[in-house]
Image (cartoon, rainbow, N blue to C red; front, top):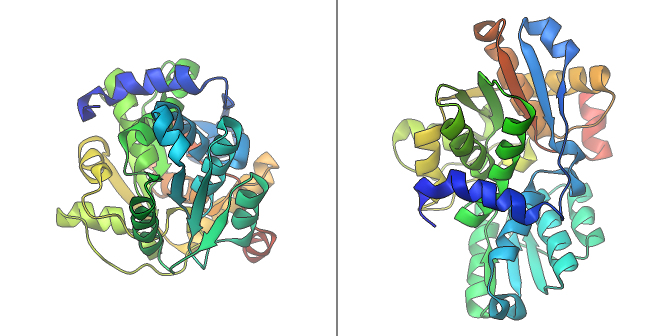
Length: 319
């Protein structure tokens, strides 16, 4: 697949995976609207099956594989959500495999992978170390490696979220999306830019782990450490040569960095006003919007609530 065909492939992916995923609501938020003076629409991927947008890319990738590749089995690396999505997709499609998880991954996300039927193995501290190990394991064992972001089929699958948004809301002035490896914002951003050329695609990252934002600023993928963050789903490095780097250069309008206290505050506001859970990465997108909200008075703004998988312990720390 050529990168310039991503928008078309997002539409194909949306049709391909439709029977396996949930079309999530795009709900208007009275609270964040009154707070900002904008019309705020929340894309509720926290209500997706497995509790995260990652299921989209997982199913699309597996459904694009050849029968021989499926027979040989698959390997994934994940801080949690990608692993749970891959585990569910492999279980539904009858594919064997193993999922490597960083040793510091959230226990609730590890348990979610196991509940979805995945075989979990722990390796590494940084997510990038885990990815590199999993890729090598797949190579050594003749299996297919399923990247959480560095794969055009995965990116197209995540882009199906943008296809849904465009059907649910005719006019969109801006969209705020949390960024880790860049798979979600690459897929959604490339599609929405194809139908709304003037849309602002805003990438949001925790200041404690702003690898993509700093890499874009430097003009190359940086090998830099990350500090502990509530947004464990976006934490860690970016694989060398990742295709998402160039896609983020092309489709992301700007990056907003937020502190841990800003993430926690945004999460509490969402929980109090919407009476449901969200994970740290979703709090990053909300906090990013709040930081530059004055630009969008009277505008239609979408914020992607990318997941709802939060541990009880983390929930205690923010309340």
